[in-house]
Length: 99
Image (cartoon, rainbow, N blue to C red; front, side, top):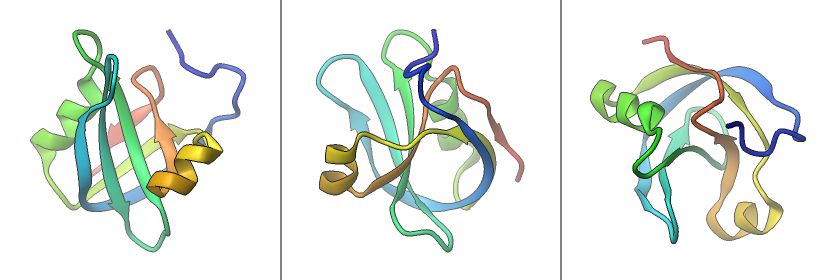
């Protein structure tokens, strides 16, 4: 199931340089918040605990830095302001580790 299907996705390549934080949010969301080379704000990869966490697991297995190509959406504005999120990627979105 695609989250936020009404939002426009943008396909882009990023160099992820490291992890700002990771964990489980209240509820079932698993996330890894990454620093992005030459960008302000964080790229957050989301998964569902007990469900699909393949993108999060792939990043941990690969390590950092990592070049990825993914489809992202803009985060909710309150979370962007509070946590510095800039790009959100969900489990049903395109996500590929290039190198």
